[in-house]
Each structure stands twice: as C-alpha cells, then as structure tokens.
Length: 196
Image (cartoon, rainbow, N blue to C red; front, side, top):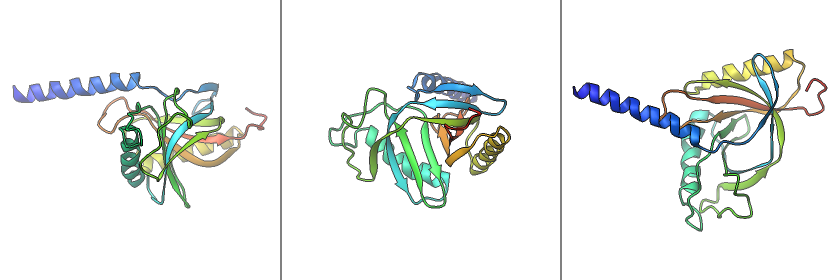
C-alpha cells in the first residue's frame, strides 16, 4: 500500500512538472525552414544573464553556472527582485571558454533589470540571429551532446549550409523532470548562404 502511494505521488509530481514546464515563458523564434534532421530558425534579439567560466565539461558548467544564475533571478540582485525562470538555458563549451545563459523575460532588458550582486553575471542583449537546430530527449550527457552536434554538423554540410561559430546546447527542463525532456543543439548559420 505504501509503495503504491509513493509511486502515485511520484507520477503525480512528474505530471505536474511536465505541465508546469509547458507554461514557462520560452524564448521566441520563428521556423524558417524544416529539413529531415534539423530546422532553420530566426531568433529576435534577446536579453540574457550570462556566466563566463573556465569549465571544460557541460556537467561542471551546469552545476556551477546554474547555481549562480539561479541565485540572481531568485533575488540575488541589488533590488532583491525575483525574476521569472524562462526556457531554454543556453550553454556552450569550447577549447577557450564556457558560458551559461538564462534568457530574461520578454518584458525585461538591460535598462530595467536589477544589477546582479554577483559581479560574474553579465547582463547583455544578444543580437538577432539565424540558427540551425536539432532536438533530442532525455538527460543531455556529454556523449549525447557530441553525437547530436556531429549529426547537425554533417546534416548542414550535406545541405551546403555554412555554420558560424561554436555549437551550443539548449536545455528546457528542470533537473528533477524525468519525462518529456527537450534538449537542442544549435549553431549560427550564414545569412548570405543562398540555400537558406
């Protein structure tokens, strides 16, 4: 009886988590083109809170960066203002640096956001861009990130679309959500490419 109750409570919590995550504000974009393995999207300019890091793995970046950024939106700022969580969380790890960014709600920008108490957090407006995106589920391991980055890279080459810069990871779900998870790999694409 107790085991059944625990299982029911667990399933209820997971269902609630999935429903709640669908109500969270998500960074706006427009799909420009859909291919078999990826899509091309247009992202308007957006304000982000970003942590720069020397981490060399997504796991360590996720642990350390998330904690610092979460502290900022939960009131770790000069006005002790709480800022709504949005999706996705942006992460990038390359040979020279790593970054993690929270997208700020659409009503906020660098002129009306409170100043972070943590000086490591940068508030900046990211310019509009066109990206290629590929989606996958589950918990994003280093192996998955490598696999889907390579898959996207090969698909872009096959379509004669030029990518620019580093591949990035987008995560849409809280760590305690076990089902219905959404992850994406994105990379900026060349606007002047005639195939777009």
